[in-house]
Amino acid sequence: MGYTISQVAAKFDLTAHTIRYYDKEGLLPFVDRSKAGNREFSDSDLDWLKLICCLKNTGMPIKQIKQYIEWCLQGDDTLEIRRQMFIDHRKEVLKQMNNLQENLKMIDYKLEFYATNCNINCNINNPSKLSAGK
Image (tube, one colour):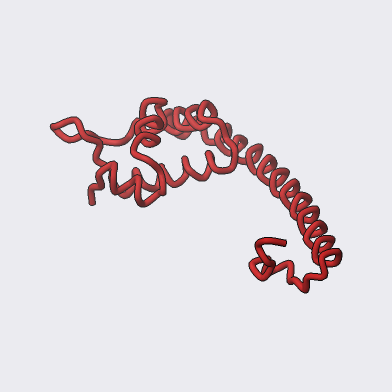
């Protein structure tokens, strides 16, 4: 099935501008064009875009994502280097997750502090029960 850039943008919660930028940066070399020059996305293209978004959302720079796609286009000779890239990126994601957990502990501590010192009976797992003005 073919998808327009607007359909893809809506599906991935991206703007059409962002998708065009990814294309301009060489991240979407596999996307076909119609006779009118419009991008036509296949289901396979959506799988690629899902991976690109995953890598971008976990902090991988565009330049590195582009390098990965270039390696993919080169074929099986680059399998090991691609595998190593994912090993390295996974380590970075785990470090980010650990940092987020530490930050969440600090936020939870502050919520407890304010709950105790403002005489608010709150549940950390449901902060919506906190009064907005307090």
